[in-house]
Image 1 (cartoon, rainbow, N blue to C red):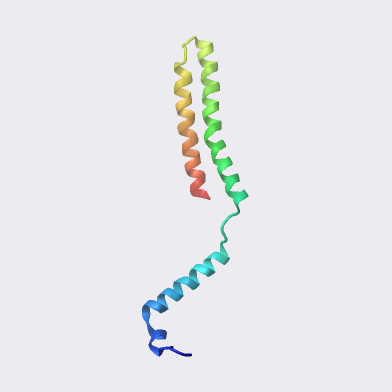
Image 2 (cartoon, helix red, strand yellow; image 1 turned 180 degrees about the vertical axis):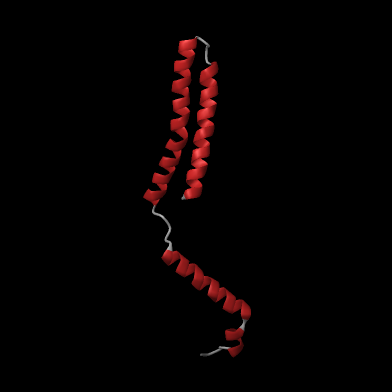
Length: 97
């Protein structure tokens, strides 16, 4: 080739860059990026994982407060507990993905 220098083939930086580019391309073929629909599905699941325990805490706390006549004390506590549980479950789910 015109302008080709045989030393370019032995340049360690060039060899390393080519190897890394090849490895990235192979990794992309083995594990392709999830589709947009799958990403939206994951976001929806993540939202419900957080919201459902929180709503359960609100419902259970409201029922207990109604039975005991204690205002919103138990509702507030169970809402926070439900939110904490939902966030913990979401954290576990994200790490499993």
